[in-house]
Image 1: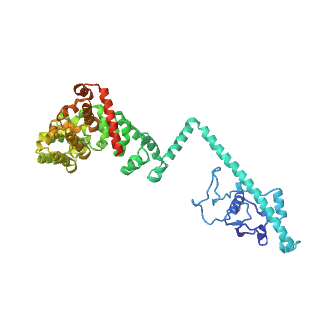
Image 2: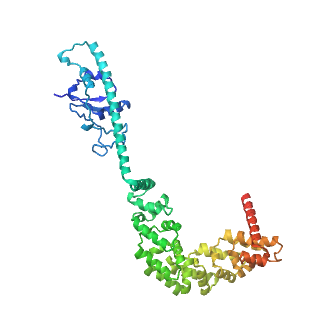
Image 3: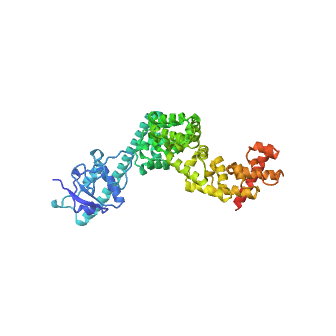
Length: 509
């Protein structure tokens, strides 16, 4: 009858067990995996409960199941952790002691005390100690041998992997490298977003337009399905946009503002909207610019939204059909705006605030259609109040705004006020001159007004009295011929020195 006993494995010498446990070497074999694991556990001073079995395959009694609730299998070459609880126990990995080790193991087996013993207790203790030392040496040798076998198996597995990769050829190796690189590239997105590896080809393609992880996260938050479409469909749609004039650098901006555009089909959406823009008289060279400025255009129905907006501009606002192309190019957003409410509120405000006739307001919209986007409280009214504060009456304000409606887009503090102060303090001119030359307010103080004024002063050609605002209007060539009587190069060199001097003053402050 076989004897089965349970013990907690510790680092105590074998002599401690020999008085309590009788080993039968003819019925006992050691598994390589167990011996190696015992060695590891001994080094880590961890306790493990094991059974000595009469079978050739001793089983380890674990305190818990595998995390997959089944026996784990390992590939050679993957490595084993010292703290891994998964031990090999298959017969093919078991190795019996044979030859000299087996004979030595038999000779060290003590006789059964029930049959009598030739040794005294003292002699038995000494021999038991020697037996423990020799068994420990045998275990160590088997452990080393097992380690060598595992190393050979790892090398074999690694070699086979290399052979498999090399057998794929150049194209196969390149494909593996690309897939591995792509997976590593977007591993962070897998952690943050609800995406899987099926999205990697799409992300990789969109990356060619300059999109990074932060951009994909914003796209996901804005419209998650846009990152779940087929890469082939996305490529077809973006290539269509590039074909109608959208610049490569604008694709990223379009996707950030309107990621849904990846879902719009070419035949049922993109083509019809591009054809609509062409019907307004917009040249092909400008269609890409309009799409980049207003990508949300594609989310509006041509028949139910865009065409009714155009009809309202013509029939209600009073924009001529010949001017539609110019208006849309200046402000593409006008096509996707609630034009009825924005027009009526601003028409009413300008009529009441300035006494402006309808024709003057229509002219403002035609020159600067962005007027329909500006807030009345934060945009229109503060500019009108500033012009009033410098002494202009409503009729002069209306002249300025009708001629230069862009005034509504200029900053009061950073643009209008500095130009007004220079007009009064340096040019010695009057505010009423702005009604005659409103263009003065649209010119750059640093690049145009101050350099030309200082240049004429340096040449002693500045007229006495109020400095003429008309000298700021023509081109550099015309200015040098008509007012300075010198070459353009000389003026440009003077302007450069002046700009550097002004920059140095700002830096000192």
